[in-house]
Image (cartoon, rainbow, N blue to C red; front, top):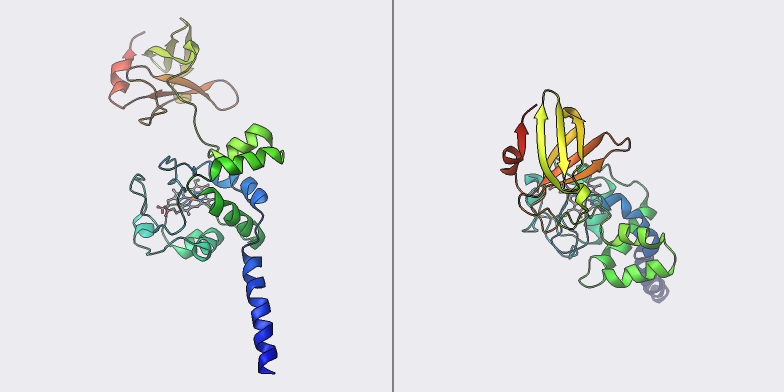
Length: 241
Ligand code: HEC
C-alpha cells in the first residue's frame, strides 16, 4: 500500500510541476503587450517601469539604472521567480501595498501562466531575438506584433534621425498661441493647451539644441516638442507676437 502511494506521488509530482510550467509562450508574447507600454525586455531600457531583462532571481526594486522605484517595492524583500511573479501579477497592490505600478492585475491564472512562460524565456540574456524569430514564423502579427512583443512596444523612435519637418528650429509664444517653425521652413500654430514640452535624455533623445516635434493624439491639433534637456525650454521659446 505504502509503495503504491509513493508510486502515485512520484508519478504525479513531475506532472504537476510540468503543468504549472506549461504556459503557452506564443500566447504569453501576445499578452505581454499589456506590459510593453511600460516595460522593455532590453537591459536597462527603462520606461514608465523598469526593464524586465534578467528578471528571474533579481531582488524586487533593485535595478540600479531605474530611478523611480517606490519605497514599498524596494523594501519588500521579494526575489522574483514564478511564484512571486504569479502573486504580483494577480494583484500587485495586495502583494506590495503602496507600490507604484499602475496595473490592476490579471485574475485569469491561464493568462498569468502564459505570460510567465514567455517572460521567463524573453528575460534571459540573449533570448529575445530567438523568440522574435519564432513569433515571426508563426505569423504572429508580422513585424508589428514582433516589435510589440520583443522590443517593448513602447520603444520610441530615435529623435536624432528625423525628417526636417519634425526638426524644430524656433518656437514663438504670443498670447494663447505657440508658433513652431521646423527645418523645412514651415510654421504651425498651436493653442497653448495643445502643445506639450518634454525631455528625452536617453540615447534616443534629440541632439542638444535640436528639439523634435512629434504628433500627439488622433485629430492632428496636438503635438509634443521633445528637448534634450529642460534648460533648453527657455532658450528656445521666445515670447513675441
Ligand atoms: C502603466 C505602466 C505599467 C504597466 C502597464 C505594467 N507595469 Fe510593471 N511596473 C511599472 C512600474 C512603475 C513599476 C515600479 C513599481 C514600484 O516601484 O513600486 C513596475 C514594476 C514591475 C515589476 C518589478 C520589477 C523590479 O525590478 O522589481 C515587475 C516584475 C513588473 N512590473 C511586471 C509587469 C508585467 C509582467 C506587466 C504586464 C502584465 C506590467 N508590469 C505592467 C509600470 C507598469
